[in-house]
Length: 388
Image 1 (spheres, rainbow, N blue to C red):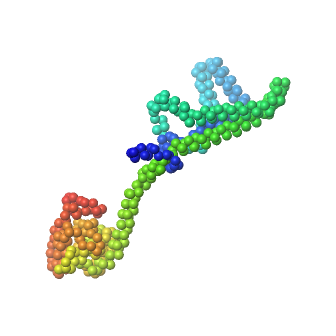
Image 2 (tube, one colour):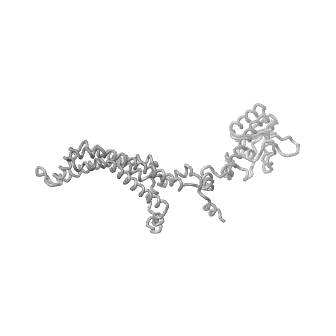
Image 3 (cartoon, rainbow, N blue to C red):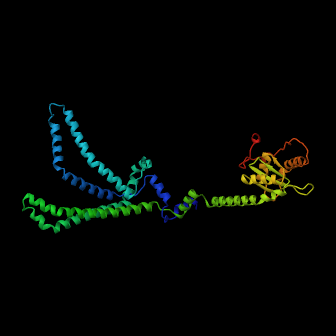
């Protein structure tokens, strides 16, 4: 079985990570609840009715004037002026109602699932026109839940309304025997109770719907153990790479400590090859002794400066050769002999230093470094044109 089949067959039992949730929001997917919108819209409806009740006469007068303007031009003005005033009144009323509803809708969504916007959510999807996919959505668990939710909503609202009206049957019967003013007072006595109970039922349904929508959303984002491993690799890198980086970091620290401790060995060196201050390598070679020159100390940056200062304190010759210093630094280890490929170059340099120390006045020799051992300051190989 292939790895992809293994991953697809794994059960998605793990809770989604924050990164997966954020990625879903980037695609326009978030928790939303229609019933919460219904509840908040009904609340806003009663607020608007309450506001209009205190301005009923003013609103009624403006409503009457609007139709008056449409049927009779005023002071011989154009009918367009009447239409303009009518449209202004309609626009003003729409604004008074629409702005609070818009603000309430945004506030509701921010509480339910947070505000998110994504162009991916409005992209054209041909699958939405597929009748087979449409039937699958209708006859799915989600479709069944929506059906049960609608039935529950109708049953609860109708049942509660019927119960309230039932216990107020005596008052309702009296409405037909009372005057109109008294009937309004009687109806106003139980109408707020009915509205309050219905709002509580709507709130209960909205909470149940929001809980289900949140559960469905989290369930759709659940991950398998392999998904968690893959995401961890994407965010933090594979364990192999992380182990390699850690190993390199430890090696770098150990190398730096070793270089710092080896600075004291510079006093036993015959020469120090520098570049000119970035790299420093202290070499020791006894004439006639078997073997190649040995690296006593080396370093770059501040350690190189300390090696140079130590060499000057002990009157050890400091020889400047950029490419040779780099080649020695990147191919040698403290306490080990130099690379065989640098025997000739180092021999020429030590011979020159030996003669200079004996008082001879010589021109600096032309030391050739093998092409594969020419490095820049980062340890990368350079070509012939970069030698200078």
